[in-house]
Image (spheres, helix red, strand yellow):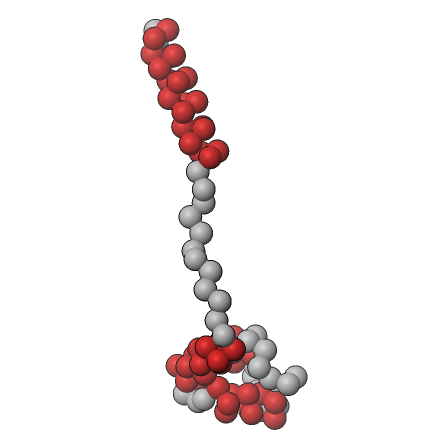
Length: 89
């Protein structure tokens, strides 16, 4: 490889390195939800996953109805909903 080709590659590499160091990562926009919007999303998700309302899920969770099955692999939807933190326990 001749000297001109090497200098061309070095120049290209330096330009690419600058771009790589200065490029901003593409992050998704953060959307803050109100308490009402969060509850609505939770309730919708409870319906989609278990076919019950958010209120019914919380009632069952607090009553201990999921104690025996909450963390087995076949019922992962229960733990997913529990992580929203709406139960008293």
